[in-house]
Image (cartoon, rainbow, N blue to C red):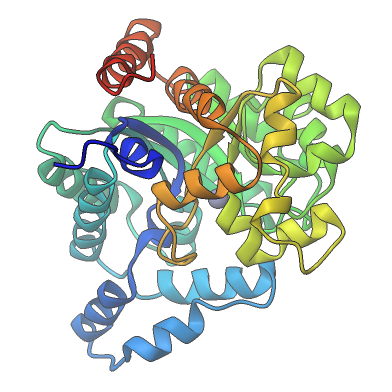
Length: 347
Ligand SMILES: [Zn+2]
């Protein structure tokens, strides 16, 4: 046995939370090939790899659209949900909030309730009690508020089946936050938590609007906040967590936009600046297969961007603390993490 495990080995052993993870973006190329074959389509691994390479954020959205076009019946969702759970278990993720693009399902005239029941059963079967999963239904911003309202209604209907939040993704620059205020008011009235992608390819004002106009309780990405100290302060004082996904930001060009340098690499990622400014930062993979990453790699990215071991421990705690779970469950997850830290001599 290795008596001096590296930090990476230790982090692998840490129980972790994933709060920003799209089910559809977690489809590994081999799974995509398998799905296509199910539907009589001949797709080669090389084609998937080529489609998983993007020049910019809109290119990524195109690829996302393509990959979701292969999800046609409940059995497809069972397959990808069980594969996702295998990946999460291998990463020692013990709690996940998984986002489902319900807006895309509705666009394809699919039965959201039927798909969701199937994929939930697939995920729970694969998890076998080792991993707790809750769900988020995401609307596509550019499809407009009316479609978003349909997603919020579906989410409300599935409240008892483990849907905890309503979110908004897609093209942040397409429609103003204000347009979705009524949808968020409705979601909240149904007991759903409110999430939004903001400050990914949009500026700091989008983050502020997500908080002040939509009442978002956590922000997907939000890295652009770093460009406005007032927005950083807003997040820090109101304790609004950011779900930071460094590799995603690199691969979609969002990082280049925020840093003002298209050639910026992970060391230039603002995750450490935001963390040290007191913003509750968490780490996630976003679309791990589409960005060829894993949660372990996101920890590496955060290290290279300037977080140290103490910072990563805090970020891991914040992942549990920011979960949409009752306080006692959040505390139990943190306690479980601390137990591992003690065994590793890190606490
Ligand atoms: Zn996302």
